[in-house]
Structure formats: structure tokens, C-alpha cells
Length: 310
Image (cartoon, rainbow, N blue to C red; front, top):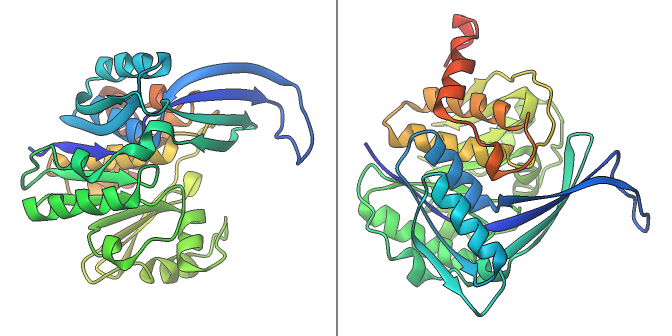
């Protein structure tokens, strides 16, 4: 069975809840302020670890109170932290999040995450069957180096290009599985897709990012997910749940997919499993703390009609 290695960000999420989001220049009264472990790298690593995969995180923390708290939390979730460095040159990454009516706005201050280097990602010894995961909250040069090491070792690479930003063909060519949401797909493909519901437009946009062997997976929230495999679409049905906080849903999907692929599951099985895991995640507040256990996902899958199972 393979392992999951996540090179990515580790943040403390400072979450303010309110009835609605403020407009530009406006102040609204909030109902609570909460502190949750987060960062896309940490979220994805926690998701994979809680779902049973041997998972290591590669990243950086500041030598501050947030850094100490995050290290303690991640260790308690079963994440291997041998490749997480403490640095006195920057503060621990922080995200300022407003949650209103189950939607969120996020401002990320990278801090130590901006210092994750190609040397950092060269430390783990990856092998065939391992899964290498990264996102865009650490430097792109570092991600490129990480995926080069992974490819040379025969590992599978998964890129979650979020927050969305342009990247070069050298990095894209190193990606085996590209996982992104509808907004990110629209940005990277140059198409307007937000909540379009148009399957043909989604497939066309996904094809613009797919190489000959690259799988593109588009997460669609309550509408499920769409994967392009060998140029052919594969649709995973959505799940109707009462969402409370969608902050970590995409990260949960990525981590869950990686965990299943590391176990040798088929892509179809892994997609259905990841979709179920994300549906649990959105029913809880917080990012990393909302990631489900393998037992919880098993229970959700066991209580659905056989015809809809992956």
C-alpha cells in the first residue's frame, strides 16, 4: 500500500461568523470568532491521515504560539511531521475567514508557507505507489521540484491549483491528476463557468487542461464531481446535505481521493469515496477539524442506494 506525501501550507484559520458578508466599505456585526487549524496542505494531510493512509506533511511553521498549537494538533491527527520545519524568519501562516450563510470569504497571509523550498521537498524518499499532493499556497518552484522528484520515483502526482493563479506548462506536464473547482477551472481555461450547470461547457473547459494521460477532476459542490479520464467524462452524483461551512470541502475531497488511490482503489471508487467524505466535511465548522474518519465515510456509503454507490 502506498503513502501520501503532501507538500503545502499550514495555517491558523481565524474564523468570524456573521449573518451575511459585508459589502465593500461596510461593517457588519459578527456572532463569533473561532480559531481552527487549516491551510490547504494541512487540511489535505489531515483528511488523508484520518481516512487511514500513512500521510506525511512537508511544510514550515513559525516559531510562535500558532505554530506550536498547529504542530500539536497535526500530530494528534496521525500526520507524520518529520518534514515540517520551524523557522524564526517568518510567522506561521494565517487565514482570515468570514463565514455567512454557509459561504465563505478568505484572505490568506502566507508567512512561513512562502519559505517552503525545493530542498524541503527533496527530503522524503518517495517510491512507486506513493501519492504526491500539492496546492498553490506554497511557491510554484517548490511544487515543480516536488513533482519532478515524485515522477522520478514513480509516484502519482496530484495538483490542486488553488488559490487559482496562472502556471507554466512545465508544472502542468508533471501533473497526473488535476483537481479543481468550477471557479478555478473557469479562470485557468479562460471560460465563464461559475454555477453554469452546463455539462458540455465544463467538459470542454476540462479538455483544455487535460494532456494525453492527465486526469482532470472538477468538484461541483452539491452537484457532485466531473472527471475527464482519457478524454471521456465520468460523472459522480451530488449529495444533498445541510452545509454549515464549505471552507475545507475541496481539501477534504483531495485528501480523500489521495488516500484511496494510495490503497490501490480504482479512480471511480476513489471519486465516489471523496465525494462522500466532502459531504460530511461541509456539515461542520472549521477546516482541518471537520475532516471525517474512515468509519464515518463507510457509514454514509453503507446507507445509500446500491445503484448510486461508486
